Length: 118
Image (cartoon, rainbow, N blue to C red; front, side):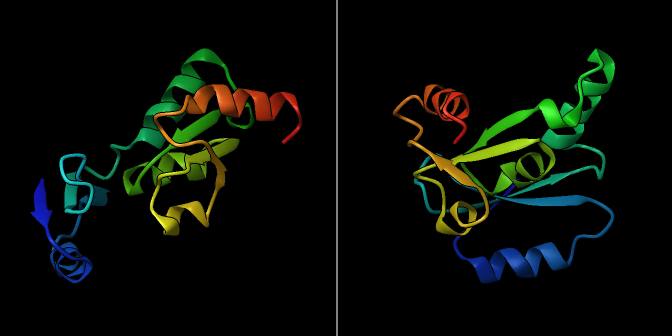
């Protein structure tokens, strides 16, 4: 993991790393520093979800995810229904349906939205 202070530094370091998956995350410590996470190509939340679905015989269409940051994007793009909490970065909130912030029971909010048909 690499801790950076701005998007430009993140993009510069990311561009120098090949053959690996590079993911941006926001520091939970200060809420603004950029964490650059580096993984093998086949390691991700979506890959883990896909593995579980195959093992359990569950369709990807029957999956749901709730994310809060950049490191959730691959999972959010993979699941059948995807939500982000209200205190996610604006860029992510523009990509997915929203639910309440992470301190206000987002799972309960999402379940009630699904039961009401959004």
